Image (cartoon, rainbow, N blue to C red; front, side, top):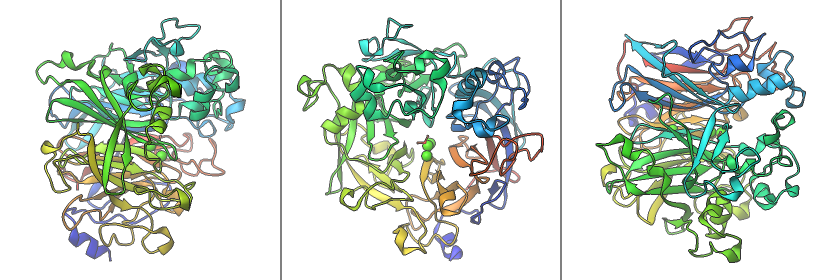
Length: 590
Ligand code: FEO
Ligand code: CA
Ligand code: CA
Ligand code: CA
């Protein structure tokens, strides 16, 4: 069966067998290198990793925990180099039981350990270089940088900035925030800035939300159900002490990685929700279009179109392009069309009669506005990303076991959807075999299709659907992040395979022709881990694999993790890390 799958596809690597063991694996003919791990020095003066003597000060200068989004930004700025660049990496969350000696629970953490957790969140910028076929980090580069939840200052910009609902006891302007958290996926802009997401921000806040004026909003987002103890030591993470702070999280951040002094900005135009990420397409009109998902069961897919247009000759002129434009939300129709419903104050139901008094209200209560315009509830939208070759947007619906049979809709067709699916969102002017340059990313109406339904095709109860025979190892579960190679082939990384007994990893497929949606396994994570950050260099010669929470399994501890990946050293715990995958002897991957 695997042989049939090989014949139909343009992919030439042999399928990697399913696995579930201590190590990561790549298809035959390829090599794995570990580039950077939790605790490795990032900024000048950072100490080496010392797991038994961790401090917040050291962690603030070192690579953070749980690396998620990866963006490769060629050096110098504006070039298309593939052997030198800035690796921009998100640090989503922390696993204290795997990070600290004695495996404490969140409620047992000391003040210093909480600060270490806060410093292990955020984002890292690391200069990297390739010599021959080998990648390494440029130590002490002046461009290396860390953003954390602990002390980095962020600016709120756009129509909601300065709103009374964003003011706190320490910021009477409603424009300055300390920190970022749950930085999941992200994206890159045509002018060479990075977008990074604030996803499950709700879990960082403690206190009784019903004692605040934001109770309805906070209940809609789940604020207050904290799995973190940050509010014990930092008042701003306790809604009873700082009732508006949770309105200052849940945004998309934009920053310029090429300027080590650039101020990161939370762009309120892109709405406030559990942002998985945000990816851009440059429309033929010059408008820049951002696609994004809200990763929770029954939440929505969004699009933002800039008011202004991109200026390819003046980088500085684009720097605040994302501060003005129109946010809309997707409504999938039975006839195969999709409407982008604008979220604009005063239009349709978005009026004071429904509790919406300004555009700032729409942006802060984005979910409420989307509910009012009749958006389609999806099976947890993770990455939503345009394929630069055909211009179609591929949206990963990771899973939704809570969807009942009477809640099935046209674009979410399985009850108790364990394995997730991939939806194609198709702008006018293009098709799977079409040219992305002709796509109209500003149209009010698109069409859509189901690309694949994940699961094991040998199990009828899974209801899986691929483009053809994927063989024994080609099936996947819980699509999460996605990347495209320069041929427009799709590379899907997963988060949830272990529930089906297979390691997470990445699967590739053609999007058109006889190999369409026939997925093939390329890389496998170590046990307990999920795979994030699929990213290629511009020449496809290097693939960046971000492995989060290795050894995150029942019974696994700091002292006795189920794997000591990637060091396999008795003196070191399991460590999240970014690996690079290259072809033996060099050349394009795939
Ligand atoms: Fe952070 Fe939706 O995964
Ligand atoms: Ca994710
Ligand atoms: Ca991606
Ligand atoms: Ca996920």
